[in-house]
Image 1: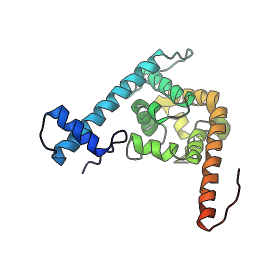
Image 2: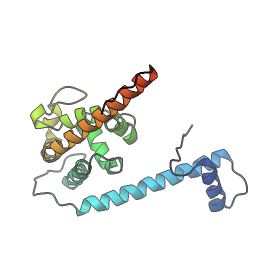
Image 3: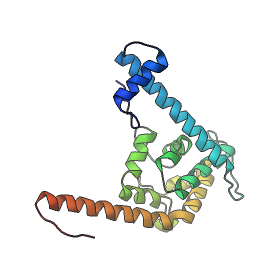
Image 4: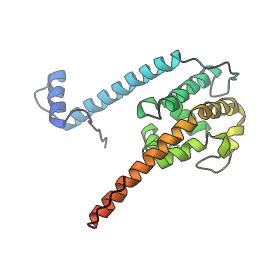
Length: 207
């Protein structure tokens, strides 16, 4: 069973659009949800294409990367560009590309977490988790794998060059990111505390 979320339009508007675009006179659920799924896939491809164009314009300082069995030097450089944009713009959903996700899941000691969106939800919906994630690429924290507790991923032969560069890029943005993430965590905790206190009829000014 495929579950499709329609965040920007309500279901009635979506069904009306379906009838207009397909020329059909009635809404059959299997056809309707298939149409929604196709639309979501098309939108993702369009967004990925835009991200790729944006990152192609970015310039990285001269770095030496080597072809690997499953990743060319050109592909490694593309991942680094996506990585820098992701960190520079504040780890936003729109900047978490498939290229970046696949490299993290395959070559940086992260498990897949189901898919690209499951991975993002695991590490970036919660600022505390985001801080843990970022510390894996922080040389001051030893670049220890979040999920396996070792730094072996940094010495992985064929990907040592690109992974090492990821840590160097993270070093440029980590201070600002840590501050922002800690502020987000504090605001979230204060809101949670307020709700718990209100539940028990207690009113406290926590600002």
